[in-house]
Amino acid sequence: MTSSATKTVLVLLASLLTGCERVVEPLAPPGGSWTARPSMRATLIVPSSTLTSREKLDFWTGMGFFRDPWVSAPASTTARDGLGPLFNSQSCIGCHNGGGRGRSLLMNPNSVSTILKLGYGDNVINSAHPEYGPQLQTRATYPHVDNRRATGGYYYGEGVPQVHHETHALELPDGSAVSMNRMHVAIEGNDDPLVVTSARIAPSLIGLGLLEAIPEDALVAIADENDVDGDGISGRIHWRGQGEHRAAGRFGWKATHPTVATQTSAAFAEDIGISNPIQRRQNCAEPQIDCRGQRTGNDPKEGVEITQPIFERVVFFAAHIAPPPAAAISAKIADGRDLFADAGCDGCHTPSHQVDVVDADGLTHQERIWPYTDLLVHDMGAGLADALPEGNVSGSEWRTPPLWGLGKSLLINDETGLLHDGRAATISEAIAWHGGEASSSKETYMEFSAEERAALEAFVLAL
Image (cartoon, helix red, strand yellow):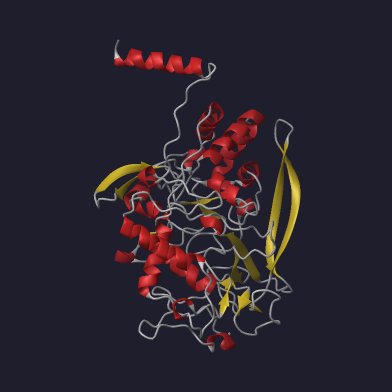
C-alpha cells in the first residue's frame, strides 16, 4: 500500500473512531520550541523551554524584581528602593496580573493596571500636560494633593481617574445584538476642556522576545502604507530614532518601543517611578518642585535606582516568558480558523512569522511562531480614536495586538477587558468596535450567522 493510500485509510479510521467527526489539523505551538505550559492555572509566567539551567536562574531572579514591591527611599532594602516620588503601582506584577493583561477601569475603578496618558491643547501634537507630564501618576511617596490613603501607606498622586461610560446595543443583520461600552476617562475634579486623555490597559507579556526577533526586513515587506495592493489595509511601521539608530517600533499600543529593554525602561520610569540605565531621570514634570526635591534611591556608583545587572535580569525575564500551548483543536475551532481568514482578519493579525531561535545548546535555527500580529500600526477609525498621538502615530492608529494566549489571559483575570482601554467585554464587542482599515472585516463578521460568529470567537480564544 502506498504512503498516500495509508494516510487515507488512517484518516477514514480516525473518522470512524471519533463518531464520523472530520479530522482537522491541530493548531501549531504558538511559540515554536519556546512554547511551555505554566505550572499553575492562575499565571502565564513560565520560562521558555529552550533556556539552560543557568538562564532559568536569571529568569527567576528577574521574576523576583518583577513580582516584589519597590519601596520609597531611603530604605534598608537598597536593591529595591526608590519608588516614586510619583507612581501608579509598586510592582510590575501589580499591572501585569500573572503576566497577562491588566484590570480594566471599566470593571475595576481602582485598577492601577490601566494608566492614563495625557495631552493638552486643542490640536494635540505630542504635547504633554503642562503640570503632570505625559502620564497621570495616581500615587505619591510625599504629601501632594490629599492625606494618606487608607491602605498602602502612600499619598494620593496627581489625580484620580474617573470613568464615564455609556452602553448601547448594536443590532446585527440576523437580529441579534452586541452590547457596546463607550468609555472616556477623565481626571476627577478636573474640568479643563484642553486636557486630552487616553486610557491604556497593561498588555500581556508572553513571547516578547520572539516578537523582538521578527526580522525588521520582514516587517518592511508586509507594510503597505499606501495600500498599493488595494485591499484597504495600509499598515505601516512606527519608526523610532534616526539614521543608524532607527528601529521599528514593536511594543506598546502605539508601537512606541522597538525593544523589550526600552519598553521595560519606560514602565519602570513612568509606572513605578524607578530611574534606570535607559531613562535616568525622575518622572517629575518641570513645575513639580516638591517632587523633584524628594530623596532618590540612586545607586552611588551607577546613579540610577535599578542598576544595570538587575535591570538586565528583569528584561531577560520579560523577554523569555513562553507563549502557552494553544487549546485542543475541534471542528468548531477549525471552522473558526477558516472564517477568520474569510473575514480578512489575517490582513492585520498576520498568523505566523519566521524567526531565529537559540536553543539550549546555544545553536541558532529558524522556526515559525504564531503570534497573530503584524506589529504594524493601522487606522482603526473614529470609534477607537482617542485624539492623543505618539510620535507620528495618530490618535486613531493602533498597533495590531498579538492574539496568542488571549483566551488564557482572560481566564486568569476576570477584571480585564479587550482593546487598548479594556472597554470590550467580549470578542464580539471588540470586533464590533473595529473601523477604518478593519471595516470590511467587521462587516463580514457581522454578516456571519450566530454559529459562525461563535466559531470564530472560539478560534481566537483557542490561540
